[in-house]
Image (cartoon, rainbow, N blue to C red; front, side):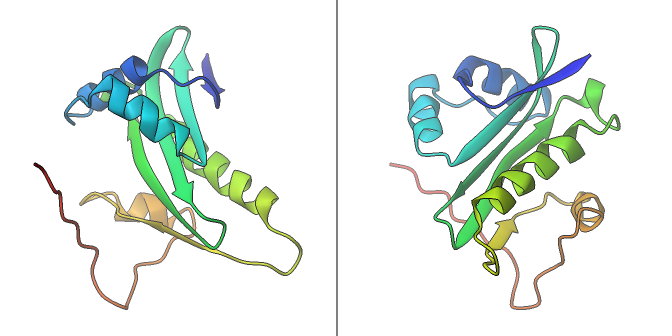
Length: 135
């Protein structure tokens, strides 16, 4: 049975999911710091096995959904959908009546339809871009 945990996320569990989807592992100390600055985050578990994750960063006016990943062995079971919907519900609970906010994300190629089914629309103001800085 899949359970969802929204507190005390463990960087090593996050890296297990990241590696399962083909992403690189991140320095655990650095990720622990990022979690302290995260507005809301969730992990999905199958018993004790971490199988999914999603994080939300933002300031109350604008939020960004990041790190949405589900172990390929567990995809197509609604885990990713549940993770994203729980992030959206968290934001909805933070809003006062008649308030709104913007929620952004950068969908991986081929995942756009997944997010569109959840209500996201492609932005017509430009294309998503990124810059990865290193030292």
